[in-house]
Figure (cartoon, rainbow, N blue to C red):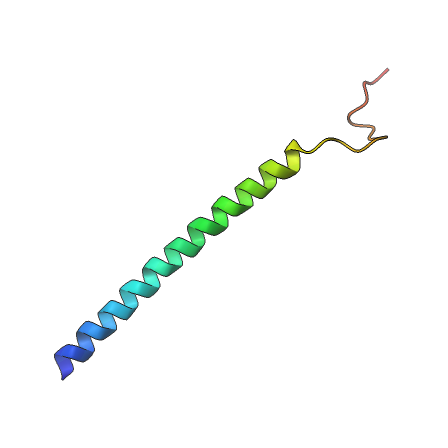
Length: 54
């Protein structure tokens, strides 16, 4: 029974490790995608940074 518990514990630990890596990877991907989307949007009308300086 101890061997089964050891294998079960290792399996659960490995699964949690993989889930952590997956969630972390998705978080980085979505943040990068969101920043990219944000900067690709048009500048609002009256934005002084988008207007040419005189």
